[in-house]
Amino acid sequence: MGAERADLVIIGAGLAGSAAAWAAAARGLAAVVIEARQPGHRRGSSHGSARIFRRAYPDPAYVRLAGVAGRLWRQLEDEAGEELLHVTGGLDYGRARDPQRLHEVLAGCAVPAELLPPAAAAERWPGIVFPDDGPVMFHPEAGVIDPERAMAAMLRLAAAAGVSVRHEVPVTRVEAAGGGAVVHTADGPVTAPVVIAAAGPWLEPLLGGLVRLPPLAVTQQQAFHLAQREGAQASWPVFICCDDTYVYGLPAGRDGEVPGAIKLGEHGSGTATTADDRDGVVCAAARARVTAFAAARLPGLDPRPVGELTCLYTSTGTEDFIFDRQGPFVICSACSGHGAKFAPLTGQVAVELACGGRPPDRRFTLAAHLAAV
Image (cartoon, rainbow, N blue to C red; front, top):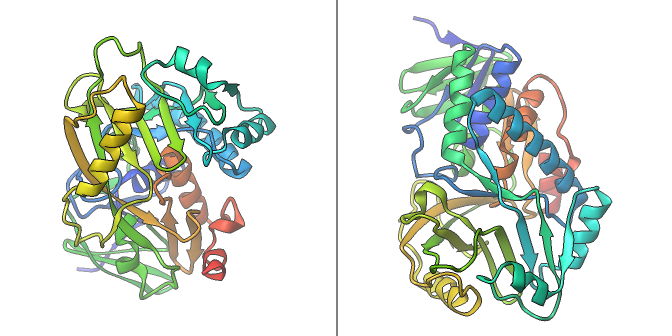
């Protein structure tokens, strides 16, 4: 029996691959999504109920892209009939975070934001201690994404439009052939003119022998769920503090072990690993740093974690994304620990590349990444 044929094959059904499926369905493409594991698995980067959505970037390009992504999140919610992005507002503070600069960039992009003296911020959010060496920036568009429900919604909408979604079907090999590509799977080969590789930390093992990729650092990160103290504050925004440490926090959602728990973690301090070799063991030193931060800076939380988890970052050297096409392969790596918020846009970009379009920014091309190495 010959190989199955499709207009497009999407490898990976995390946030990026699920979004690509949704975008492919909107174009009427006969697409096949192939995922090696079960829905919502926790071996990669997209699982769980809480990721930060924010517009606060020092780079206007990311501010604008996050704005487009925000509109697409609302479109997805309308089509799915459920809330996937819960707006909480967001705080940025700490001298290395440079709230003044962030405010200038957001103002230049017409994004609402305000600068507050530390005492005024403490009055509004008494569960947080703010350093007194600079202002605190608040921007109201920030919030919390629910990745697990978002992936399910995008795949459900794609399947209803005719996209074939296949879980627990490992890809054994990919090759260029006949002006397109062949994806060999445990269930047999699938051919298509183009393949979107949205495999997260499995990207290099999947395409490394076919496409020249820049170095991709895969690291195991950890986060902790902390319970609120009674009467700390009415609601919690997402927040990023960057001075001596780089700590983020957000409402934890369903994963939080106890109602109202806050998810707290360090950005970029993980241990090197691979997609298949991670051990899932939380770093004791990281736990000590995060709990010390909570004890000193977050009086609204009990610093003793009620839960903890690990996940994977897949990072380029610049922390910019990779969106590019080489022959029949679209490389889609919206990673580096800040890609979740862009998911609906990531899917659109990947499908646009598959249909002959260009990346939204030259920095996202393979050539730019390789030149930066």
